[in-house]
Length: 153
Image 1: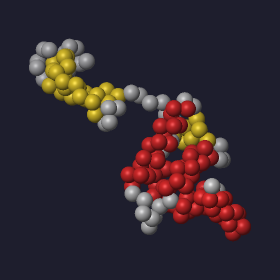
Image 2 (image 1 turned 120 degrees about the horizontal axis):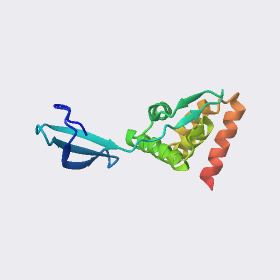
Image 3 (image 1 turned 90 degrees about the vertical axis):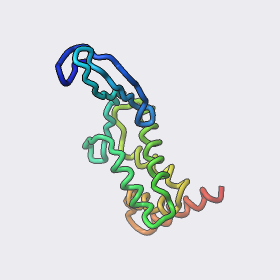
């Protein structure tokens, strides 16, 4: 690696430490020529995860977008932010583990609902009403009946 100070092409690693939950390595380096010390970071380059939307358009998976939807569904509910962040983390982890470069937005929505129903029924119904775009009150009532059946089981 080139020294940023003198452009010499020889450096040595002085110290290495894991950072970002061991997803990256921080290295302190020293130039063998001028002695200048600097820091580099090394991390795995992840393949972009593309979400195919209902209209056929494609966009990169956004943790922030999923988290915003969860926060909106859980507004004024006793659900801690760290629980919502864990949901987003587990969804992204599962999607990457599947190994597909593209995933349907419907699949992401279903994964959110599977996790949300276990945490808070009201937040689940809020999310489902937006996600499934209930056409009328009867579809909404059917969803509530399904939810009640699951709780009785």
